[in-house]
Image 1 (tube, rainbow, N blue to C red):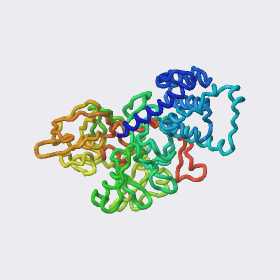
Image 2 (cartoon, helix red, strand yellow; image 1 turned 135 degrees about the vertical axis):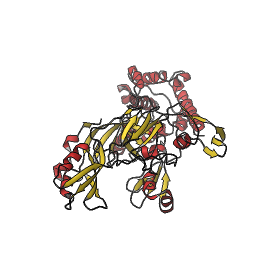
Image 3 (cartoon, rainbow, N blue to C red; image 1 turned 90 degrees about the vertical axis):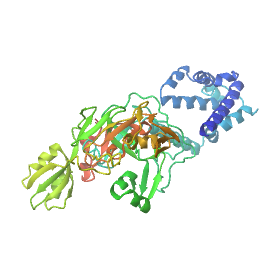
Image 4 (tube, rainbow, N blue to C red; image 1 turned 90 degrees about the horizontal axis):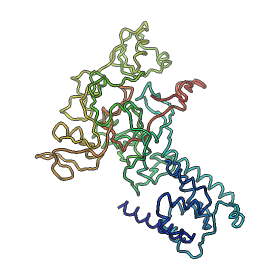
Length: 500
């Protein structure tokens, strides 16, 4: 239904523009030919005609089009605030009204000294402030939505590659900016209204997934920001947790009975940041905590953090020393035994301490099946350190549906590709029709955190669809250490540090 409404609105706006072009002494058809229409606008408003070439530049073309469009309306005497606002928000109503209004006439090129002298117009102080605020809001929203967006790392799933408190810029241009799927939203808010709470968006209009051209495709081992693919969020009293987090530790029945579970549109789900270790068509697996991609050893981040068991004497670990090294640790049931998350180099440092008897990496054995490991199916006795092989779906790839593949790809077929998927006694049914295979409509990716033993990632919830991809992490512009004091709370060596 939405596209029918969109078509009707577009035709109505173009009809109004057609009438205005005729009033300016042009042919009506000139208003509906892309690029040529803007060329004529430049002539009617006395703007440089070379501006038309800037319409080929992504993002810049938005500013150029609206600059010419609003200049054209000024040439018809439409310069008041409410006229500018409705021309942008409701062109399908007001352009036809102005086009048919005999009192609305073309006054001449609005970008000339003669025009300003003949038709002087002074803005009030309130109008000046309103224009400035609206322009800043629109510009910032466009930059945030199509160019760059700032993020803060809230958890340690990427330690030590990215640290809790890192502030980073994420490029929307690298992979191509995603057209907002939920376009009606409060500026600068992701999904929740600041201060007051509640939804910061409206689902009145939902657009299909569309991505503008980018500079590159996602490359293996890129650090990528994406919307949480499992979709649901559990709302606690004063905070939120992802559905997968809560189910992992508490169980599905407990979560559904005791907490509020909400489902948001794709582009309003929580933003996650991980390393893309598997591309469409890749075969991934893990053997004794070693990532395997297409039969070869996968990328090992230089500062990858793992989980170690540290055995000490009765004195234990010095809390101040652990804080100085920024090591996350927990006591285990056995006296003098601790669980420590650290890099291989840090493990060697801890091992050298006089009261430390042993340091061993805590790698799960293949026989230790964990129910929190994707695809959460009894046929797959997997855990986070040992799983696979798993083939990542690619657009156009066809998978045979059977008892082993169906659990692996059911979520993608049903939730990410919008089909009904049922298992009946005589086989599998897609959209009510019996199916022995399925061909995927989009690409998928396998995401993992560099903190391999303390990261909720694809090992828990599977594939990340292409339409969930937000952008590529570029560099940290600031880093705050909550355990630091005064100037040491800023990690100066991480400012403007590139992300690899």
